Amino acid sequence: LIHVLKLLLIERSVLVVGQSSDLVTACACAFLELLKPYEWASNFMPLLPTNMIGFVNSPVPFLIGMVVESKQDTIDLENDGHVIQARAEGLTIVNLSTRTVRFTTEPEIVETIEGCPTPM
Image 1 (cartoon, rainbow, N blue to C red):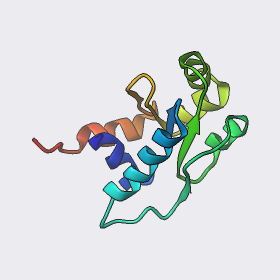
Image 2 (tube, rainbow, N blue to C red):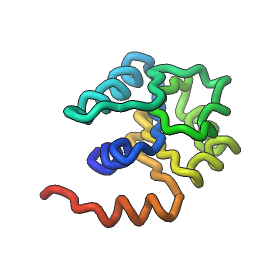
Image 3 (tube, rainbow, N blue to C red):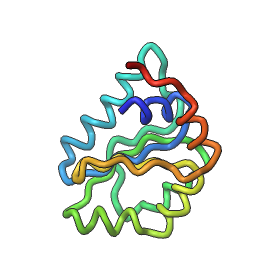
Image 4 (cartoon, rainbow, N blue to C red):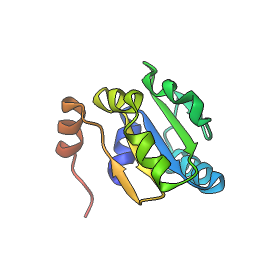
């Protein structure tokens, strides 16, 4: 959770994925609340249809929620070409169905996150 908040504070893109629209929306909104007193100034879409997955290649930072039907759809989404490319360019995926976070593979961001002190 702390690392995801760090990514949002340095304006990196985060995709929240899950099987329940209520849970996905609540989680995406909670991330914004946890940023306070800072404010998210970039794109925020609590729910984006899966047929608009190409948006993850947007050049601007975003916080997006996306609902999938099953765990297999989640796996398919994470293996989508748009998502793989976006992960290399800074996208992090918070998967509520599998309770995992797939951090960006962008080297500069990985170093930045690992270099930030974490509270005890």
